[in-house]
Amino acid sequence: MSVKEQLSTNKPVKGTSKAGTQDDVVYAHIFDAILEQRLAPGTKLNEEALGEIFGVSRTVIRRALSRLGHEQIVILRPNRGAVVASPTIDEARQVFLARRIVEQAVTEQAVLHATKEQIEIIRGMVVEEQACFDRGDRGAGIRLSGEFHLQLAKMARNAPLLNFQRSLVSQTSLIIAQYETGGKSHCSFDEHNQLIAAIESGEQAKAVELMMHHLDHIEAKLNLDGEGASDDLHAVFSHLISR
Image (cartoon, rainbow, N blue to C red):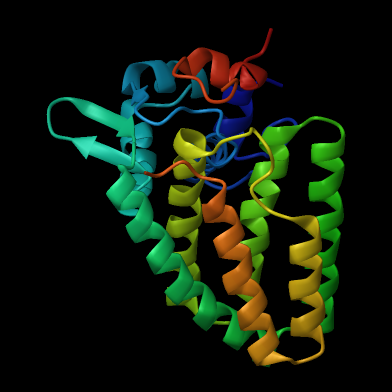
């Protein structure tokens, strides 16, 4: 079944766990393409091309793009269409400042509220993340690195924090796509595991300290004083198009 047929029946798209309304599925695929750095900053998101790729109306595409615009990872330009956001150096620094504030609150609340089940889920994500990088699937590894931080926000049991975190993680992925040097993973498996251990043991101050060190490590890899993302919509979503 092609992605177009699956969208029409609200079934998960082949190779993913995405389901829901057409808006939800289109939004999720574009969100993941940005998070995995397969869509380059500045890429024009042509409504007609995306409608053809996903087999949906331009109204559905506009709703999905509007959601992404609300999260500030897509820029909606009146009469000129949408583009993937392209953060400036100053904006990148602002995002990292915001992340430090949000991540501190998220970490503190995660220590208070995390369940054993959530700890096991996030520990499994780190294992999968490392496996992705080991086999050379950098895009999936980057996405899982971002999802690690989203899972922490879910542990915090605070919907506004989760919404802030989702936007900031996506913006961080765009910043990394533009400014990271060396082509290496921006997250450390050891740092993730150390964070999990501190949260599990209820060491709030230690967990916050580890998180701040982790964010310092990510930012240090950026050039703020490769083969990666693309601006070809059909190439980015080629795995969804029935051959």
